Length: 464
Image (cartoon, rainbow, N blue to C red; front, side, top):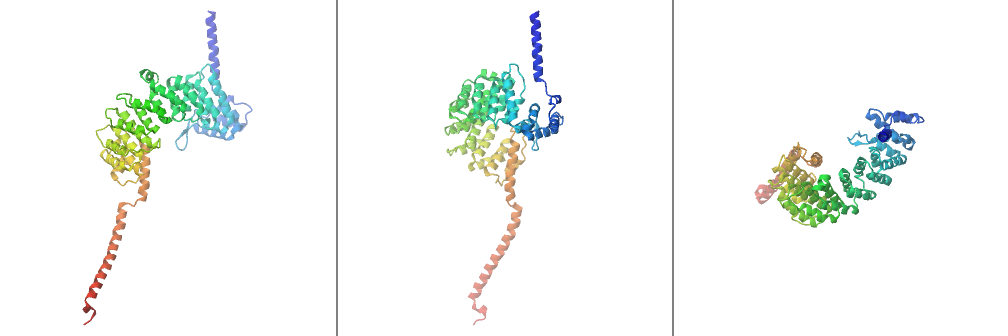
């Protein structure tokens, strides 16, 4: 009975400690010796009006090292988002801490170390948000974020992996590789995502091992992991990944998303030997459309991403032939249209314009028209192609970027149209000029003829 009582007492103490640790800051926590103007700004960070909070944080950031006392109060708001005049969300308090500089960074690093070492989960990710803002300017911030990958709280480790995406500092490579090899769940997937931006040869072999071990068991524990790994290998551009990616693509019936990502990554790697094999996948109608569309986009990425030149003169005509087959999968034909635009070969223009007209009103016609405009830099004088861009509406949002692409294409078309003289104006200008020119030429010809005739008949001049 006594032991049970002791356990209950210990649990109560631990809960009290956790509550004290997690207790939110209030205005009463502002130190009494804080200068009045700084106190007022800190108090405004508690305002319910987001504009007041943004203004107060900005002012505190402008004061820099003078407002060290405000650091914990700004960290309290570091997850808070605001929308700027361009409609972009940003964490204003985290930016203010970056403006304060070294004192704020040291405070964040100290808190990160405490979180990483604490045996009891703190569930406080605000410090990660601030370290992410410091990441581009401080290697210490990168080290602190990478250290949080080993935090005992799985939610902290997961959040650290999320915010390391976009990091290009190779100091984070080995901590991320450790998660890739030994981690689990979403944390492992997010760690792999980091290698879309962070290029380091040391990550390639661990990523290849994941693809070699792919299967039902892996997918049940880490859904989508293999597809993310395939994308990351393409971003690394390392030729060691080619054999396993080709093996995945050539399977007749497999995970379409994985095959799509693997095929596209083969193009991103930029090895000339892969182009023909991708073309074979595109032309094989027994292969699932997801893999075939990835192969088409991979061929386009060979030029637009890897920056390589395709030397085979038959690639563009073969892709144009796939585009014109109306009985083929719509997904495949859309991908081919996009790839032809990326390749930038003028031989594809007729096929793109033809598809824009024959498939008017659906996504094939729209993307064919978009890439025809891309291929000519907007210099298209075909009303049907222009209408295919203007009139299309993707109500199912099948391609989320279609609105941006349409705006860009219309901007180019309008720019060219502004420099091109309208047809009616050209007719109004040319016809009068042509008429006057004909009159002048006709008059000179008639005077010459009369002169010759007069010279040949002396009697007309009054001679004998």
